[in-house]
Image 1 (cartoon, rainbow, N blue to C red):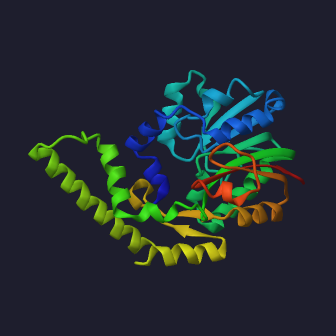
Image 2: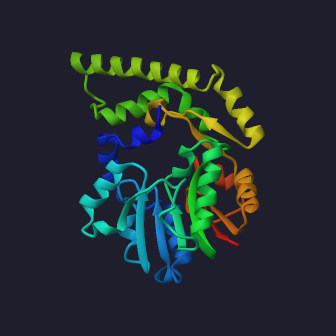
Image 3: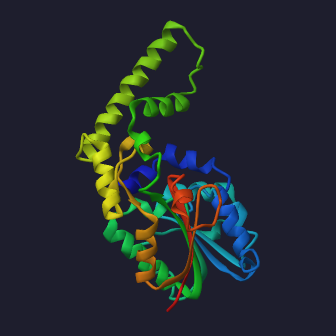
Length: 280
């Protein structure tokens, strides 16, 4: 299923518009860049419903929030008075922006993982193009070596996630409540089957271990009910890719907001955050 169409769905964009927070790693990255941000012309790519806008907008010299889903940008314009700062734009084709236009590009919430490997490279090259020499790039990406990755595919975990979304009372013992929980359990089984089919494997552990050996790969997890496949990559593979493209001073941050090269710490979370500079 086309991911752009999913993210452009009205309910999805409305849900994203409700999000208004920074992750621990994002807070740490702001702290590391605090003295530089006032001078930066910033591109907030994959801005979604404007989750990060309120925090970065007052910190930087100029700000543009962009997303390829028109409904996401429509939500941003509802939330913020300055509608001119938002653009409907695909990171893989940013011809609207000139070379060396930005000092800082942020691509948060694993937005880059929505593309296949070929388009991921195109996106990274476009980001490199619009960044000035020594400009900063920060993004997050799914971690293939996350120690909790297997758990995403367990029926009981899928069921629990669906229950939390349904807001059913845990203590409810009415016939209606029990019936709804049974329906949700059946849905969890169907999602589990869908994930196995999309991953072309009924042995998820074997499939994940194969991706880990490669250092990266496409994986359909239980996000968006398993309707899409996303890219997972290891810390070492991502560092190598960035270095090959000319990025330097690459730092990694765990989901706990710790700047580290310790893979044990990085692998405690499903995401790894990166901050780097481009050398042209």
